[in-house]
Length: 219
Image 1 (cartoon, rainbow, N blue to C red):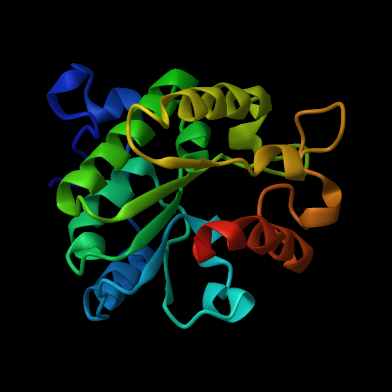
Image 2 (image 1 turned 120 degrees about the horizontal axis):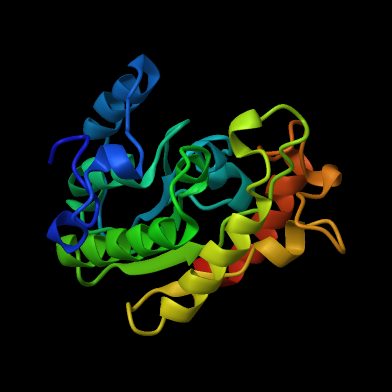
């Protein structure tokens, strides 16, 4: 698949340039090349997504040697789809997906982002029908720190999460609610206790995420 191919294929007539472009950097390509050499089998649990996945040593935090990190900083829905075949070819037992915040920063409409995420999950199912797919809600963020590309878009996450929640049953994935646990009360902003930059999580944030994830890992 071309890196700039529309995630929705023929179901959306707009070009990927109209929905946001995926421009992989050297770090991305090194990471993809590295992952291609690492085995995945049907006992594995894959953490798949962007920098929010990449930033955690999941197997250590959750104490499960079968958990494998397939996160890449800056990744988008298109990027995850580009490398999905490599991720799914070992027919992993479970895949946990966190993706979409970089698409928000690329000025793609919230409903298009949500629909593209659902289409990505459908594609993962076609590659490995027996794999159980878990889809995280997007986390809140606080653009006032310095993420100007996200400025004023905090409410987009609420729209995306609502669509992802509502589509779970019909698209055969488990929706994991993270947002309400990380948002600052009475706002749309990421609680400062869980971040150092308004977007990425600190150790306390990852500890909370792991606690919320543990029941799904165990089931």
